[in-house]
Amino acid sequence: MSHLENASVAIIGGGIGGLAAALAFSHFGAVVTVYEQADALTEAGAGIQITPNGGRVLAALGLSGQLDAFSLRAQAVQPRDGLTGRVIARFDLGAQMPPYRFFHRAALIDMLADGCRQAGVTVHLGARVAQVTRDGAVVTQNGSERHDLVVGADGLHSVARGVLNPQGAPFFTGQVAWRGTINAPDMPPEANIWMAPGKHVVTYPLKDGLLNVVAVQERTDWAAEGWHHADTPDNLQAAFADTCADLQKLIAQVQSPKLWGLFRHPVADCWHRDRLTILGDAAHPTLPFLAQGANLALEDAWTLAAACADAPLTQALPIYQSKRAPRVTRAINTANANAKNYHLDGLPRRIAHAGLRTLGTLAPDAFLKRLSWLYDHDVTAS
Ligand SMILES: Cc1cc2nc3c(=O)[nH]c(=O)nc-3n(C[C@H](O)[C@H](O)[C@H](O)COP(=O)(O)OP(=O)(O)OC[C@H]3O[C@@H](n4cnc5c(N)ncnc54)[C@H](O)[C@@H]3O)c2cc1C
Image (cartoon, rainbow, N blue to C red):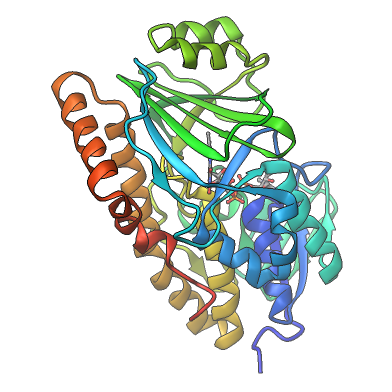
């Protein structure tokens, strides 16, 4: 029998990690309440890559029938020289592995939110959690409610993380990202990574003829984090004025770029105490250069709920952290390494591109094999 049967579980945050956790706990028999500070469950107008490891969780949450309607199946990843536009290598994602998907963020949230509604999850909107305690109290402007378990899925500035790990504030990683979408119908379902010294751009198509554009630049000066910092197209274009004409043409179409400073914390030392735990960006924010932040949040959500179904909290929560911490640390270290590799200059850049070209020609499977620890992992199987 599930230890979660009729247990009251509160989830702070209705982002990808929070809604997935709500569905997972509901799947294992809990009575779930989500507290979301925003007035609506939605995400900003940009894309997100859901890799096979995250896709398996969506399928286990009962959403497999909707994945094709809500996303595009990726066929390849192409590293390119951002200064010349030349394709350096092409790594096939299509035939060899379970689907790797390109979602519009809003579509992914809609799909999860719809699943929550059908599962009977209670969602409180406009409900900012001001305080949370280790013994299961959640305090909002409407008062205090007590739960058997509280899950902080409240992102980078998590109140729950602060209770479990009182020291430390998010730090600026020295990278900023402009994000936007442009109209570009009939683009092949491929991700392109345009690499140039100190900067790179990732483009991939979404449903409805949109192309998602994420343009990253190394910077010493600080830029704020969040979706609300509009920048001018001129600033974006100036930052990429030294790149090839094809890329500049794409960038010139981004009308209302949003500028993000990329911030993160170290992986939290403490993920749980008593009746309180954390997941996703609240526990381990990552640079986005391996496209794993949301995928790891999905994996956390399933692993946490399954552990709590199998054992009492005193055993389940330590099992959850011990299963997840080494894997998320490895993913974060790989994303950090990508940040360096994408932005090389001079001789190291020429050597790295030659290596990629050789890999793409002689052993195109090697690229995916190197990431099999990531993509082949199935948290729903154990
Ligand atoms: C440029 C960029 C590109 C990315 N691309 C990818 C990608 O392709 N693939 C991928 O897997 N990941 C990607 N990521 C990372 C991914 O977006 C995040 O890791 C993921 O969204 C984290 O989800 P989360 O649910 O943990 O947190 P969040 O998405 O931050 O959600 C937290 C939620 O909690 C709510 N909240 C916060 N505080 C409170 C409070 N006190 N009370 C109530 N509600 C609260 C917030 O309103 C929000 O809804 C990218 C990130 C960036 C910056």
